[in-house]
Amino acid sequence: MSVTLQKRLWRAMAEGDEYGAVDVLSGALADGLDEESLLLDVIAPVQERVGAEWAADRITVAQEHAATAINERAVAALAHRGRDAVRRPAHRGRVTVACIDGEWHAFPARLVAETLRLRGWQVDYLGAQTPTPHLIAHLHRTNPDAVLLSSSIPTHLPAAHGAITACQAVGVPVMAGGLAFGPKGRYARALGADEWAADARSAADALAAGLARPRPAALRQAVDDLPHLADQEYTMVAQTRARLVRGTLADLEDRFPAMRSYTGEQRERTAEDVAHIVQFLATALYVDDAELFTSFLTWTAGILEARNVPARSVIAALDILAGRLHDFPRALALIRDGTAVLADRPARPVPGSETSA
Ligand code: B12
Image (tube, rainbow, N blue to C red; front, side):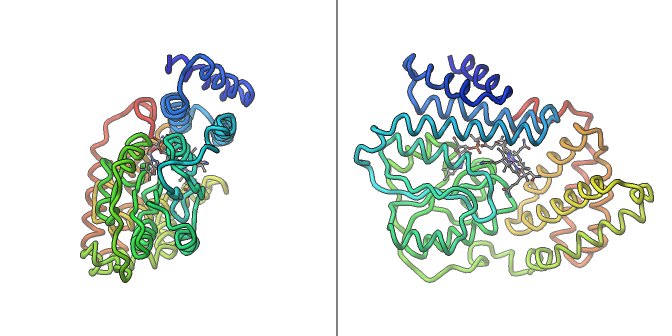
């Protein structure tokens, strides 16, 4: 049933038909499907498909935005439809669901928030990019049983670390989740989160089992959880990021004179790609994990190849970065691993046709 519904919802979204999308969902409810299954087995996979189609260059950014907006409104329509149930006094307790500062992917957090509401929690859903000081002020005001922090892009992990320690310092346990926290949530653990869950259902189950409150304490420093930060490599790369990106672009232009005739848009794309490479390199230094960097490079190569841009341009950028970071042994090792992964890369099918990310 879910697969048929996914196909029907996808078709309505692809046609930009908001009312059609809501009709598919209302029809499924009328046929007896429960709201949680609708959210997590129909809407969520369709939203992931939006990402796969964009990655494979089969839909444009505008189509991706339009489809996401329709899905968001469909979730809101569902939530309002069940308003009477939601207004029943929540019997479980109160939680806050928020995205890390800088994180735009609010939809995954929204799915988690709606699932918890259905399971009887009073949920304060704060949406995208919540600045940590405002999050903490909210916790002081509401004293929830837990805060659930969502992030989809790994470059927000340093900000996530600050948010996690700040919430714990005021005595609120933190559950982390979302793609940013890596396979099996390994970065959530490295950053000291009290709990991690792979999806909304497991999040609800873990909350029902109860999270112990941390003792309010002085803020931990980042280096207390991640001793390798003492070498200052992350700090140096993060602080000189803008200069590194500018320098790498200039060197790339020297190496590939054809770049001088790039259109404004091509230049902008290249600058964005180099900026992302430097950001992911810095984040990999932060969590001291080569896979964070190599999986990002594999993803980037896939995105470029789907748009007929050869991945070797990334290898050239890495080579230039290595020259500029010759005094940073951990950064050099990451760049070496990244280059090896790209050099070994076989010809692949377009990205996203096999996975959602
Ligand atoms: C929609 C979308 C956007 C929208 C977001 C709109 C919104 N309101 O959310 C917009 C257009 C803003 C966007 C922007 C970007 N995006 Co985007 N986006 C997506 C997309 C297509 C869907 C996200 C989604 O809703 N997924 C559906 C849910 C169900 O999936 P989920 O994240 O796995 O959530 C479940 C679990 O992880 C878990 N969970 C989630 N949060 C939490 C929290 C807690 C506490 C717990 C316990 C569990 C939990 O429960 C959820 C439900 O079960 C994904 C593709 C994808 N596969 O997800 C890309 C994706 C995440 N985006 C991506 C990228 C690259 C970007 C941009 C950098 C693009 C750009 N060049 O600008 C920007 C970054 C913006 C930023 N600063 O944050 C990449 C990330 C790849 C990577 N290497 O990290 C993805 C994977 C696309 C792809 N296929 O490559 N994006």
